[in-house]
Length: 158
Image 1 (spheres, rainbow, N blue to C red):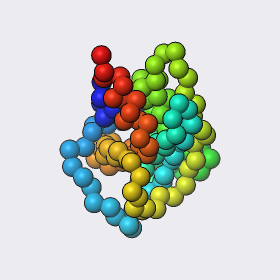
Image 2 (cartoon, rainbow, N blue to C red; image 1 turned 135 degrees about the horizontal axis):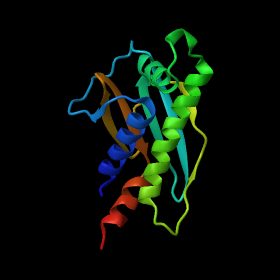
Image 3 (cartoon, one colour; image 1 turned 180 degrees about the horizontal axis):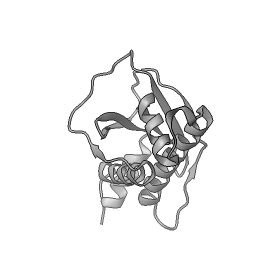
C-alpha cells in the first residue's frame, strides 16, 4: 500500500472507532483561516527514522471528539481530559502507520504527544498533508520527514 493509503486508513479507523464520527478524506482544500482557533497535536518519530506527525483540528472538533469518547456534556470536559483524548488519538494513528511501514523484524519508537495552539508556519521541510472531514468539519494530518516516503517506497518494491 502507498503511504497516503496507509495514513488515510489509520486516521479513518482511529477516529471512527474512538470518537464515533464518520470521517472521510476530503476532496477539497480548505483555505487557512487565521481567525479559527485550532489545536496542534504532534508526536515525534524517533526510530527507525526521524520524523513528525501532526494532527491539526479546530477546537470545536477536539471538544466533539472528547464528548463522544466519554459521553459527556460540553461543560463536563476539562482541558486535561481533552489533551488525553487528543494525545491518545495521535498516538494510535502514528503507531498504526509505523507498524504498517516498518518491517516486522524492526522496531519503531515514538515520542510523547505535545499539544498546543496551532500557528501557521511555512516550511521547506519534506511534508505530506492530508485534509479530512469529520461530519462537516475539516482537520488535517501532516507528516514531516523523508523517512515516511522512503519506508513506503521500500514496501512497494518486490
